[in-house]
Length: 514
RNA sequence: GGCCCUAUCGUCUAAUGGUUAGGACAGAAGCUUCUCAAGCUUUAAAUCGGGGUUCGAUUCCCCGUAGGGUCACCA
Image 1 (tube, rainbow, N blue to C red):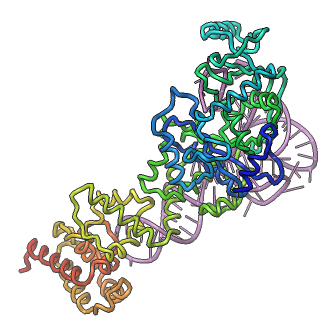
Image 2 (cartoon, rainbow, N blue to C red):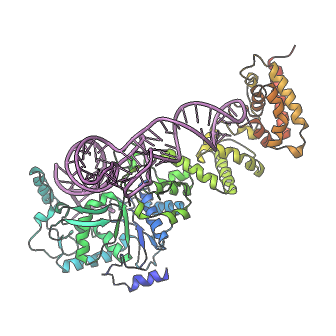
Image 3 (cartoon, rainbow, N blue to C red):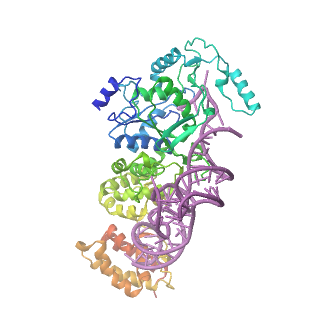
């Protein structure tokens, strides 16, 4: 890091360090603070981060707040929180002011933009826009009428006025020509001269436009690779013209494929259910799973491996393998991915998470469960088998699939009856027998395997369903639940015997034996 | 509309001139202790269309088609 700072200070800002051997990779994620972070933004940040880390480079978080109109209060904090949750850590960002290149917030860098704007003015490459909004609108309308593309440069003034900082400043693009350039993902790209036009560098309000600010910042921050979505491809000739005007080498362009809506007809936008990434945190997705899945929409290492921890992702990631075509973000597969990561997690961590999730459900309702460390330990594997995401625990609780671990089940006597039995006669017989077997199991052997071993021969001989269904129902009071041996082991001998007794009493009350 | 980009199972994707076009998610069937899960096994499912180049094209070229992006004092 020291060497980077040195490099940044010693470097002549007019000569970009892009591509300089040994200069180190510098990437950035540069969102505008206009709301929450969605999937597309998170993936862009992730790729930039992975590439920097893979190359022992630097990852910068830069806030592009040059549109004061659209800025949403709290966005900057929200973006940082999202990145932190995902484990996408930046080396320089808005949270510190001692960066070698100054602030990472564009509104605090206005001097730099003015300075470079003035340089362009001095070189005769920028000029104040003499037209009013109405005049511009009229030019556009005229071009529309004539069915030709509107180009500002056709209206470029012959004599540039003096820029006083309060007029919009336009860049005088190079003589129209076809531009060709290389993109690390898309390969060789080109565009006709229609793509080239004079564009605004500085707005009337004194703020730079994205088109200008990002280029100046990338230069001053030593950015070597620009990761961004494909909507910027068509602006690239303008950027190239500006790089030329500034006399600098452009960084490497890395164009990311779009993330599409599930009908594949459009880019996934906030209106199409692109969620705030922090929503996934609320639902109990693991950040590693999220990152793993995000990485795989638009990139693949070329192997059949799909589950990666962040460290392996960094090792495997390669911009040469980023896809050209867009892809759909499939939440169902994300859920599967989350389960895979859940299985890889240390069990203590899962226990703590499950405990916290149950407790928050308790707080949100009037449940009063005695959630001891022992019960958390025993039910964790059972829950883990049944969930993909922690939010599934909420569903389990809502559907009363956890109650029987904490309180006596309530159910109707007839529910104890196995579907093939005509009445409760055999149910009672089997329950009594199983109770005897259970009672004989010493405490030292009260575990799932031994309970099963003790009870199995009887169940096997007398009809598994006929024996096990009533037992399981007596223990859980539910049609669907874990198997009776698992339940018994969790509940403990005392509770098991008591619940069987309750079941037998229910049977007797329902159909007293003659 | 001009300019530009993209195109393998429903979805995410592998295969960069030679494979029975592979894997995963979702689906279907089956197995495993009664139920529910989990797990395992099996199965169905794709190279957008048409021309080239080549002994041979998913792969290279051209033309279509479809979809996307962009044409702001938004980023």
